Length: 210
Image 1 (tube, rainbow, N blue to C red):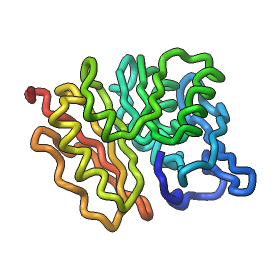
Image 2: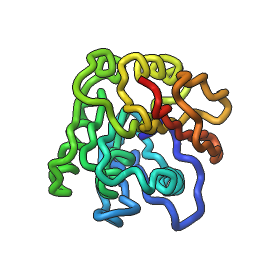
Image 3: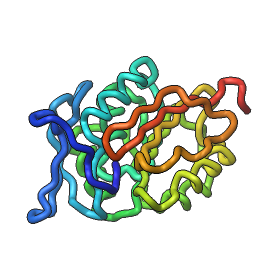
Image 4: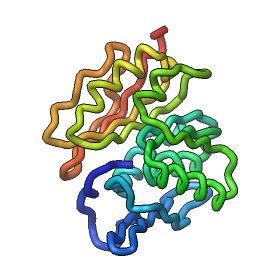
């Protein structure tokens, strides 16, 4: 999800769009079992799904790590990242969004896709990360609202709560004019790209970290 305007792309390649008059957005899954499935979501809270080109790059980076993984999608919004992961073989995805209309839409789309592999929590991200539960995740997706200093606040929570297993992955997006915040010491920057107004990065948690 990204609560921002989408970065520009080439005509004909867009797989997300919103209609402010109808209040409905559309998302198309780009790979995996649900490839080309069109899903709808409410145009609530300024949600703008991660563009297709960025998703394609991200899931190419994670190509050998998605199958069988347990993923956490923070600021899930339309579900562009979490549902894409399920389509590509993730074993389980937990989706977090504090907007009730978006949480309902995520549950509706999981039912539409006949998937029981997604857990949706309508909850503030900081509150969720403040109550550590269960085993750490293999992959965390984090595309927060821009210009609100979310990454500086959430990086320490993810580390102190051991939300990501050693050897796991953390994907983040932020506005390109922002210097990428310092990541926890155990996180190693694996890949990073900038496309228009968005910088996106993939970190790996040191396999030796505890």
